[in-house]
Length: 461
Image 1 (cartoon, rainbow, N blue to C red):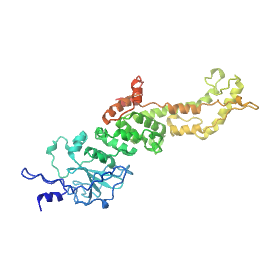
Image 2 (image 1 turned 90 degrees about the horizontal axis):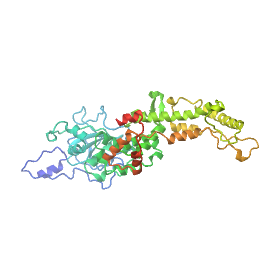
Image 3 (image 1 turned 30 degrees about the vertical axis):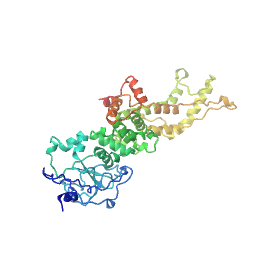
């Protein structure tokens, strides 16, 4: 058997370098399984290892009996939310750990892969095998993690493993880009995938990698605010919009969090989302939590003031009143008073039933602005009608102004782009390649700087 044939049978990337007189070795084509030509790494689940193309186990991964798969094999993305990366106490460790077993799948991105990156999905462990030169070129953070202050050519390790924090599906997308496997990069991603890709590329300073794909990915989220899943996952899409610099999506998702967040006494007064997850535990840009808290409190305070206003106004003498709720123009004060008294009398019982009368403390109101809007909408106030009045004399336009106050608050929420966040997103869009629409750009570029809130000032710094 020839030396060349021996090399073809040996799948180890740690084979010795040939001397100057040796012929150039033939790269082992049979080490990697045959790639599927049209496999998307985000639309399918990881294949059963028992059904994968079998090759000799990789000698550089602890003498286990893994099945080595090509990076074209799909990586499961559904159900991977709880686990990203390998926990400190995981028994599945590579060489150098307390245990040398790592059951799972080996995914290689390059024939010359020399670095192992452990990852995990909700169902199995994965070993990503990547080329150190590629990931060092793609990310200064990875370069420092690989080499530190050591020159790359001075590193000679049979066991080279680095820990990378990130969801397995997101890492697969990024590593496919880094290794020029562009046909394996998905053209569409869901909200969680977009969020995890944004986390990885932001943390490891390689947002520039998504330049050719990011606008395709974000396009499908233009109407995400109307999606049933938006309430639970708007914070994930918000983070991605910030990381990639998408103005419209960032603004819309911030509005959603302002409208949907609740005040939780058990969390020490922190805001939580519809799933009772604390906003402080989410990946949010610096200063955005404070902006959301301030905007929510101010909006609820306006609504509570509107709920309390009719009682205060009707308890004031006629000369001092600033607002009339009866729209009758006949200037018959008795009729106006009767109309307003009837509207208020009909409104108080349903308000009290829903915890809105007397109006509660806005700073500790536990429900969301959306819930408050629905509760106010259930408060019915009938039109005043006198005996034997003709239809044109009905007070159909008379109102206590509750619904109008709620709608005004919901449509006039504080804008996160009128402050430091706008400049942040513009700079991030230059790196990611996001194309913001010209109308939005002109709107905020032409507006004079507004007085910034404390949270906006923190974000600007």
